[in-house]
Length: 390
View (cartoon, rainbow, N blue to C red):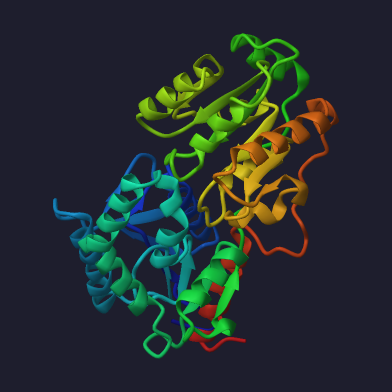
């Protein structure tokens, strides 16, 4: 090596799955590709890689034993730790439950707080009691608590930078781990791709709505998520039963909607509820709708809310969602199980909705760190420090 020539920086990201499907996975995929585009040599430590790989990124696949979730979690954390003992990197970024990273992105709240806030999503009486018992006795839950305690053990990880996806997650994290130094925990919000998620032109919107058989007076309330119970789809269907017949619901994502179809049937609104399954054209899904609603029992920072806002929709969210800070305060639902209040908020949103072409473009607040750039800056800073450069 001569002069100021320095070897190409090496970066490792770790997450059980490398792929584009899923909010956390999509973030990891994009961050890895962006770091590679910045000229770094990037490895992605994962159990498996699926689909198209990010450009310039080398996957390091460990596999996972065909056993329960508890063993899989432990196996992956051990595999990453073992790999890092043998292979040195300039910067290590953890995107899951692993240890010994320089930067840890926390995409969800602590296990105990998650359990407490989401219990009401699982019915009442014996159903709720059964869920509580299963969680209490679950080996996986015990393992996650132990892994979490080790992950946020400040004396064991004094230099680790913890980055939460919302201020709500930061609050939850500091509540559950009071020994964690608040100065060590920062916030960087998710950011939608504003070149992809934007209001549709009137002609495209009219084409989509015509294809769905919608008339001018129809009001479509859309939502998105994989876990229907957690996302409050039941509350949304109960709210629909309190709304006029020109209101309908469209649900993207999820699996096995039979129980929710049965709920809609019991309330006499089955014909007004459409489960779309996995949707490839999410901008079109939002663009054909009039309102977005997410009465979620728990969301660290819902990407769907941000995407819907970027598409020009008025968005309703429960207060248990980290991205609710970007929602009109008048459209925040305090109790995710309150169908009557949700119905009122939907009416309010419908009354103030303007035509798509008149909706203002979504502008990200200047005072909220967001997207990939803060992570790129952190990586560059760490590389300079480790290499003794100013």
